[in-house]
Image 1 (cartoon, one colour):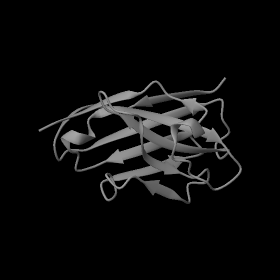
Image 2 (cartoon, rainbow, N blue to C red):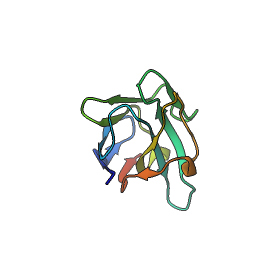
Image 3 (cartoon, rainbow, N blue to C red):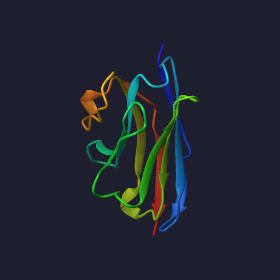
Length: 126
């Protein structure tokens, strides 16, 4: 049974930093692409960042480029999202997602991922 568990969310002031973690179980370390999505109140779920199964490739939404960094440790089956220079508009529930693949791809649409975490709230105050 596949399970993704996020942690690290919280309340932070604008300009601050947070590091989200996503612990995966039931998946082999390098057999899946991983991504972070977020969903603000009343908004659709949107792609934030993604990483290939090996960790060699990454992709970011324009709104977070230069501020967020995605990474993974396949030995620990864990992914990370380092968020710096946070802004109030980054406030959302952040979700970790995974998709089985043997290719070096980074899907960016929610329907392309088969596994999801429960989400962690990130609130940035102004």
